[in-house]
Amino acid sequence: MRKEIIGDCTLYLGDCLEVMPTLGKVDAVVTDPPYGTEEIVRGYRRGGVDTIKNDKDFTVSEAMLNEAQRVLHDAWIISFFSGKRPKEIIACLDDIYEVAVWDKLQMGLGGDFRSQTELIALARVGKPAPLGKGSTVFRFTRDASGHPHQKPLLLMVSLVGLLKGTILDPFMGSGTTGVACAKLGRKFIGIEMEEKYFDIACKRIEAQYRKPDLFIEQPDVILPQEQFI
Image (cartoon, rainbow, N blue to C red):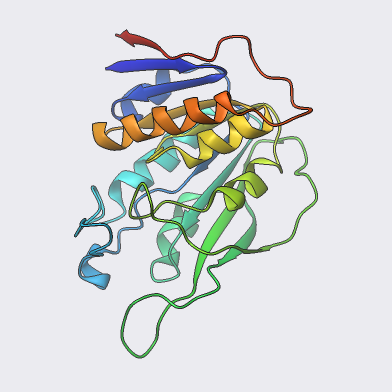
């Protein structure tokens, strides 16, 4: 297992189900797990990638959400999911507070019925601090520059901005949640099992710390510290 520390972001290259039980307290999970829709959409073919790892079914995502609810205390879980498979996430999350919508402002590829939205579950574990003020509709164009399912940075900034404390993303991908945390001065823990995306995430988060936002206090350490554990 590889570990990198970049500012207030701690990144793990490994399996989230193995890493999560070793972590200390986090205040929220913000993540975009595999939707389990590979058989429905018959391959994505975005950015040269035909399929998404662990997207044959919802098994891995279900295991992550169950583990999150087991190890978290008084925390939020904010998880993207597909309207094609809503029953799975509803069955996983014990206390869904709200469902928000990401409007991509343009239709996706497909046949007669082309999707323009993705759904976001906001669920509670215990009694977390109240969310910040916001809307249940987020309107941002999609961005797949680093990962076939990369979310727009401003979308993740909007979601992270609802929260305080330490944010965990067990399916970090290209690290957009981590970039949003660095941008807003939040502590972040990210886990990714595919090395190519892990490396992209490290570079993007480090780049954000090199161009910090004004009026947000930044940590003293900005260069990555690589560890193998």
